[in-house]
Amino acid sequence: MSARPTLQLIDTETGEVKGECPRCVDLESEVQRLEDIVTSLERDIRAWGIRYQELKRDKAQSAKHHPLYSEVEIVFREWQRLCNHPRSPFTADRFWIALPYYENPKYGLKMMILAVKGAAYDPFEPMRRNGTRKRLDEWERIFKDAGSFEDFCNRAPRSDESAVSSTQPADKS
Image 1 (cartoon, one colour):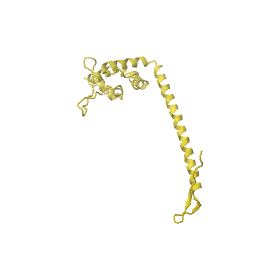
Image 2 (cartoon, helix red, strand yellow):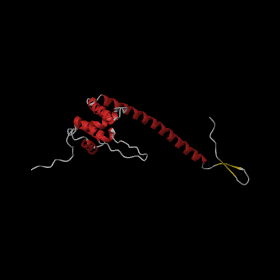
Image 3 (cartoon, rainbow, N blue to C red):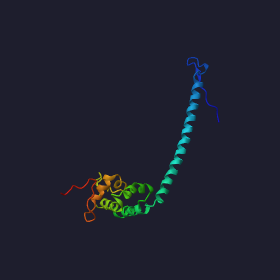
Image 4 (cartoon, one colour):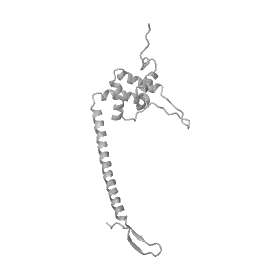
């Protein structure tokens, strides 16, 4: 490895070398300190990347071993069939997105399937500039939040189930 170049002062009129720059020693030590920090940060980033991948694997494993995995997968397979997404994989992320709706006593399996039917029956389809339509019936959109979930339930054909609402029904006295 070659030695680091040193800075020297040169008289611009005569071209005479005046000697080393008085601040160069301080600046070189500062550069070395900053290079050490960058090297340390790069090592930390690699370590965090490894930890992140391990956590993703752990999350995927815990999803596959969850007791309700197969029940949520039933809803996913129905979504694939009804919404025509046969190549979409059932991932751990998709399981964790839908699990709260399965566990919620107000919703459960029946309401989840109703929401999927609503997405298949009446999806939002905006027109693209090229004249085609984009069908917005994604799994993540259905299970985004309670309001979105209930909206998709209400889109289902009336022959399937009655409407869903987050508000209490009015008293009929």
